[in-house]
Length: 89
Image (cartoon, rainbow, N blue to C red; front, side, top):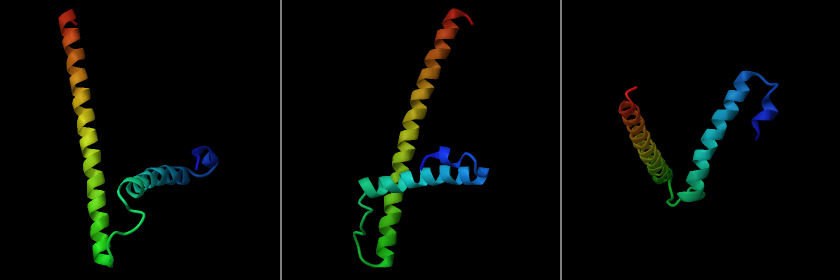
């Protein structure tokens, strides 16, 4: 859904729609790339384990991506700092 549809609604609904969009994105990735459309195992306990392991994998991927971004930002900041130090500013 587009957020423009909810412009005239209370702020809580806008916030809920933004959160829903973020959460739905995570579940869509789990379904598309991690075989969550169907349960691989039978039984509530085994399915719960499958779901937990899948989301642990998704969180690990997120942390690795954020760590890479943080190191890239740190590298760029170091280069900028060195540039300005060479200029004497």
